[in-house]
Image (tube, rainbow, N blue to C red; front, side, top):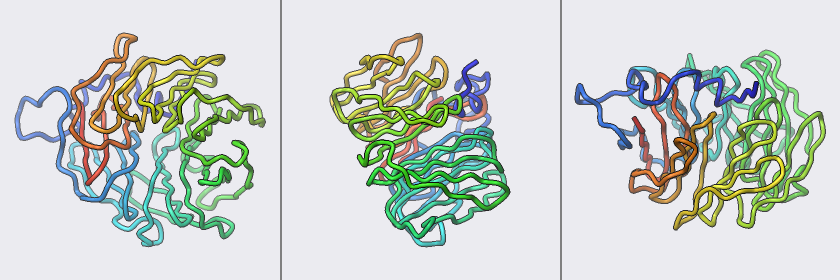
Length: 313
């Protein structure tokens, strides 16, 4: 059975049952995309779903969270070490208890979602380059954290308790800039704009990129990967070839897949996968940069410029 972090958190519920995690002024919530009140005006770059609700990160180190039955709220205004370094990527442990985020000037932090506690792990081994991508394998307390920077350098941290042991650096993409990472079944995918490196059984192997530059990836299994590109496409790697599923007018910036569900977003663009087919969805008129599929308790979420947060019921 294929196991992904996203799939674990999604459980058996559909997003239409997510009303318990969303506030509304009406007893009959709207269906479709709704732009909700945001606790920040800072641009939000990425979002991840956890068992205790979605967490988004962005400009100036801001971290925001929506708990069950509550409004969105700021968890950390200034990011790791209160340094106000911008955060660009976020990932959760397999059980959703910890969320890791990375960004400029070596920023690395970990949020314990249930308590709101943030721990600073910035500049491991003195490295203050800007981290561009992160993914996490394993459950909270024993997770393995992968972070990559704009020079294609990858560091790996094994957490035991509260302190990580760092390994690396290595350059699985040959030094090409990292843009995104994801994992499934313990297999890690690290994407640069023009290639994907896949780690399985302790070895990295190269997957040639599609014809356009990759902007984000979402792993469905150890061999199946979806990606968005700057050419406005959603493409799927089936273990052998890339197949195009979507062609948008503008670049797409983020994608999320869980089982037979999917969302991809970009500038004033949202595409949804239902019934095995991608279709254009009526999303918010905003520059969207991150997306996360919902669960039985929480709605789908897209985030972007000027603190935009949109939810789909």
